[in-house]
Image 1 (cartoon, rainbow, N blue to C red):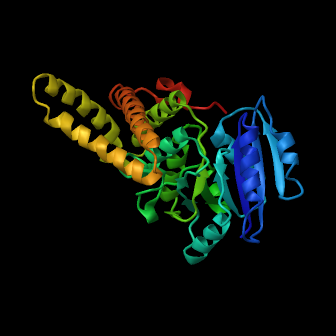
Image 2 (cartoon, helix red, strand yellow; image 1 turned 180 degrees about the vertical axis):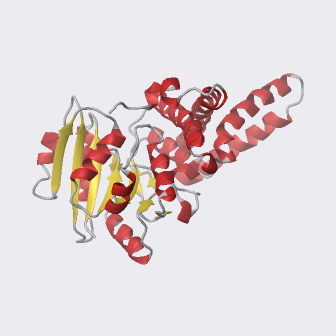
Image 3 (spheres, one colour; image 1 turned 120 degrees about the horizontal axis):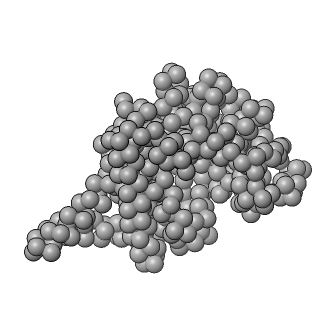
Length: 332
């Protein structure tokens, strides 16, 4: 197989520099190319690309801004490989990544795979806390590659493989964002393609993000899920309600406590204590453990609030998703 790494980028030349540097350190001789798609950036990364023209087989394309999904499709149409690997620009790739991918595909070939994300020691405390919250089985970590079934996995586009055959059959990503990756996975299943999780094909997902940006991000995740459920009701799960139910339950727990019934708020206390201990054992840092509690609160509040609003508008009021939430849809 000949692999093509597809990387959309928007105003993040420093991220591309780190990503490309990591690709030069691969421990295998497996052939690959890199396709960078500049999505209408005002801070282009062309000078960074030129640094790697002698060490990587690399192509660079600039196009008007139309969102990450459309930019990935643009890159795959121009790529030379027969298997595409889609990465976010804020990822750093381990040296054995491609070896792990090829080994897994040789053992059990699928037309689409996903891998987990992890944190490097050099990441900031906030990045490590958010990484813990996004990957822990105690929160919603299954959506990032921690607990979904290996053979029925919905790959996420920060670390996703897609065969050329599957891309041509599915026409790639839709124009919803976020949510374009589970949308593609479900369409692939309906077309008869298989997906899987390759646990050893992880990336270091840097997530240059603030608390405010994290809240906006997870809020959009929450808004996208009821839309996907309305499109594909057969794949809706009760677990998608968990952050919203957690949020509602907390409000009622506070009310019960006011009326001298603290049992439920005590359960929340035990939950956050468990989170704190788990993060501390994982990160060996009291500060990161405390940050992890804040990250979890932001995650559940942002996602849960977005999910409830979207469910009300899309499932109860029957509004069209693109009209209810135009910020989730890129115009092509």
